[in-house]
Length: 367
Image 1 (cartoon, rainbow, N blue to C red):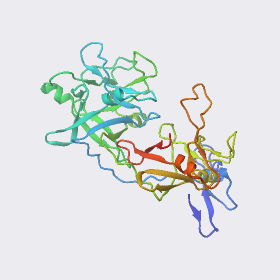
Image 2 (image 1 turned 60 degrees about the horizontal axis):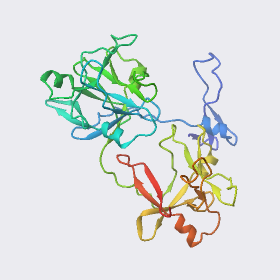
Image 3 (image 1 turned 120 degrees about the horizontal axis):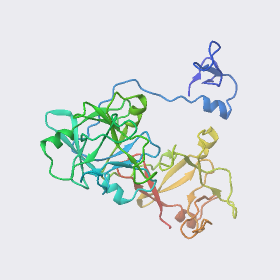
Image 4 (image 1 turned 30 degrees about the vertical axis):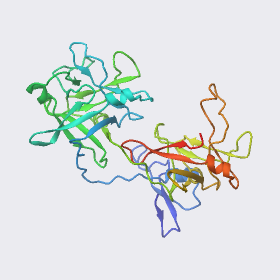
């Protein structure tokens, strides 16, 4: 957000007011000279894009997973045990379900090999099938079959022809160093992408991964972005002594974990909830701040104290009343001075998320 120094902190914002000379092409940018409301705070947010060239990510020698950036939730590119309808090659698909089992993760791992004499090229070998991902001379049968090509895994020892068709240019995504696009060398730079086309055997669980053989539009450029996750051990993030906010990675949009002024139905404890609306006011942000305290003698544990309520987040012996109440437990904020029992129930293990150093999982020590 930007505030005018000359105008005593008046906020730059983008109201829903068209520029006088036209209606839809341009909008006014103004300053708000009074105390900003939640609506003004929302309209005063501007994202930053750094206009600079981003080098292509160096993935050679790494075992990686690729996730579609275009599709909500970041579905994994993976190679299931599903053969192509006309040969023994394995399909390359997107896993679009929210639950990703260890089996799916295993089939989503690819080893990135160098192409001799071509530092900007790569071959991706499926760890599960021990075969190369390649772009055969097979059109994808759709309304416009000449525009799209299949992408498959070669199951045996590769010939020189397969090795040639398994080469991909690695292309950078501007200002996103953890993302890439892949273009087939054999297919004159045809772009690997994830269209809005379901796999034939089911409707929502899996999506096609294809190559686009014509000049890419903005839509194809968007669907051709994949984020990179390196499959390796990641240390748990060090949050002790920091004031933090936590966002759910699973839910689209990353809703904030926060502690509103809503008391539990049976006591004076405050609820811990997710704020799922797209507009996040300063009040919500204030209630989403937690101070991370060390637990003496336990370097991998933490207590989280709500800055707004000055109380600890803890796991009481209260089941959440649902169809399977024995499976879920409440998480609350203790509003007063904590007893030894509360301090015990406020301890959480900090667990790393592989290949995501800015993410964590929390596990209750008491539970």
